[in-house]
Amino acid sequence: MTTIYLSSTDLKINSVSIEFPISINTLKKCLDDNYRTIKGKSNTVFTWDELGLLGYSKNGELIESLSLELEPETYDFSSKNKFSGKCYFNDQEITNYYKTHKEERVALFKGDDSGALALNDICAWFNVDEEETIKTIEISTYKPYVRWQGIPDDKYSIKPLEEEEITFVDFGFKLSIIEELMYMKGLLEPKFDIYEFADWYRDRKIDIDEEGYEPIAEVVQYFKDLPIPKRLATKITDIYQDGGNDIYMNLSPFSGGGEDDWDMETAVDAKQFPNLKKATLCYAKDCVYDEFEKMGIEAESL
Image 1: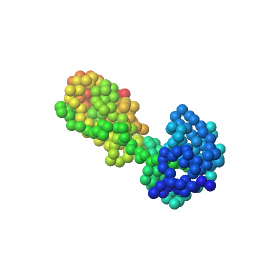
Image 2: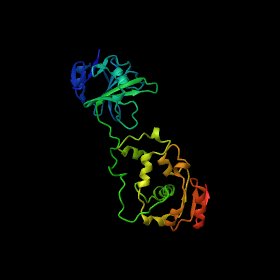
Image 3: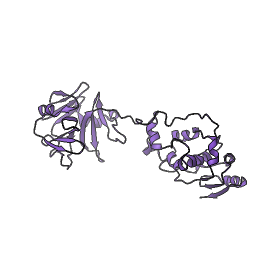
Image 4: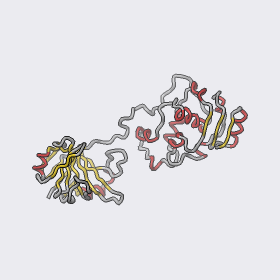
């Protein structure tokens, strides 16, 4: 029977200490040579049907990960039997440890809901279905997931302008201007993306799936703090509010916001936009329409 131990000191298969990547010859000694080989476009899979175990290799010689098939799939490389051995993590049966130590699970990639158990540079990732049945355990080198990796450190940092900026009285009005300059005309950068911002933000994990039904506080603050150059004021000829505007979908992805969140309470900021001729509104107090009209700006409800 195959016995695998993951401990704070090493990884052992049948009492033999191993390190990734593992040569196929080493696994022959740890396991047996009763395996078949399936070569694909991107990797080679070594399948031990009797043991219920798979080995994945990029070059066909060194194995980067081992898969314990608790519920085998039906692919040509899938094992014909379930994993028949024992696997231990910190001296406890690994599936029980996984179920009773949820706080120790770590994500290995974006959207990893099942997570992995990690010890030093080795991890065991769990493939779990909707019914919480563990289908596969994949053992490999542990590479911590850094959600902001690849995003410039300062991408969403608010930087002071070295030129005159517009001062806004009304936040709802400012959001309409950002919609035009950032999303419609591409004159404000970076183009804000809530999903990228959530990955970039380091003070806490922003869970969009959970929080996206209401305005997300850090995003609201970002747009409140975002400076807009005064030289761009002449680029605005009209504003158009709609619940599906990009600005609202980035503030509250699953709702588009509501009147209390984005209502324009005054049109006084319009005085700073000399070419503004028309405002189509859906988030505005009644008095705002009159204020626009008095300034010679056509205002209508969506």
